[in-house]
Length: 187
Image (cartoon, rainbow, N blue to C red):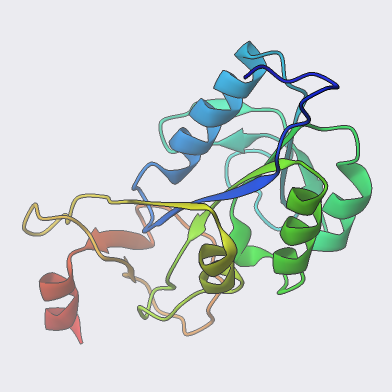
């Protein structure tokens, strides 16, 4: 049934998760573009620390992009997203744990929230607020890259450079998607 004043839209949370190079941002951009085609007001946010391809735009590894607003914290999204029907959030793993409550609050206000992020870090450990976001979401889509060593579905973003910090921005020079079996061989 189309949206109008007589039938207000119900809020919901959708999570797109998986390893690096799996198409999370591509899927986020696709869903946001469809919302725009449906003439819904769309706003997109990303963490300020993510400057790999652009200071402001959300950019996929395939170079598709959409304008976004970089923010310092999840609370900024709550304050800025009052007019949107659909709210996109990229690289959610880099946000604080408050993102879970922000998304719940916005969904309870009738907003559709679409979140993309890594579900696990380079050690295969659940990453940031992503596990809790998956738990509260109405819809979770797990996308997969292809293991660069054997061609199976990738399970983890394996770091191939030195460093033990959980957050290290990088691309193919720093990470490779590996399946569970190939990843376990590196340990």
